[in-house]
Length: 454
Image (cartoon, rainbow, N blue to C red):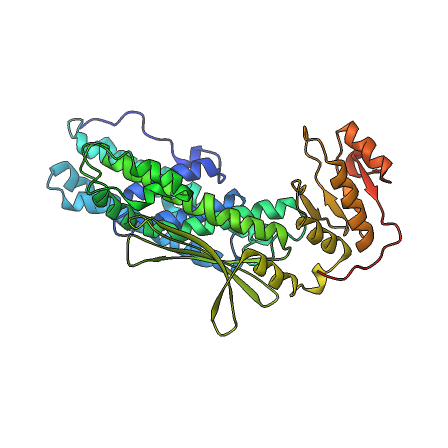
């Protein structure tokens, strides 16, 4: 028996771990590799939700305890499935000796004691027992990622008051909220779709060699089509060379087309157009053919909006839709403009201010792109000045005219474009001193007149 060189340092010698989201992504992959195949997608989804929450996506406060409990359970089970069970199945003497000595069940916070025990065990493992030593390396990797995961779970408690946005209205105060809401939309949609991707990809891996699939001709599924048109020559099964990588690429392509290219932009348009919307649950339902339906709900003041995408890769079907859900659960399909009209007709009083009304009117403007706007904490219509982009003089005049009609002040903050600043000063904007010496341009309304309409 010989000592094992270069053993990992004890956690007692390492500074307390903070939840670095990049390291958390690596821990997610390591945990997934140790998890039983039957529960791997569930574990991956739970860890993905944790990663998204700590990356700024947010998480509903009421769901934090459930997520913490689920991840702790899966982490404990990964030790049994990925470390203990392989030793129990082995008949190698070194594996059997390690199995007799290794802790089978332990409190996750006791990882330092378990690592110390593992270091003692590793010292008497024979050097020629390569498989056993490699397996101990995986056990050390597991123990190294434990403090990070526990810290990430603890961070949820700290971030809960500010980062748990899922149950709060989105896009009420500014672009930061809108960015977080958009990230949350993507996170929820991908978490809903993820469990269904393996079975879809498995079906496509069989179908792609039988003949052309209709999905390869749908422009809205361009990433999926690219993957379907380039299957590995030796087959797309897990046992085929190049098969696993191609299946992962196809899964990523499907997620990109359905979430990043379809539903997330559709939800983003609604969130920008209508302040105060609450982001509800996302759901994926497998269809009868080779596809399914992915849904997302948005709600405000008793109005529930359902955004959906239906697809069938074999049949070449892809359809995006929006609908309103009544109190009794009845679903009525709507054109996007009709959905806008329903939301505009049910505006809470807190969102019926002069600045909100001006923003809604300007967001319906035809022609040149509408600048990014939001209602700031002081109730002004704040317009973002985009560096390097020449502002349309007609748009600026319409912005001022609309704000005057609704009785709203307008603020550009900060303004680095001197040409734009000169144009704004000519339109009645005046320089103001902001916090930390940052100056901004503000225009108060002239003879405000309340104009009817949302």
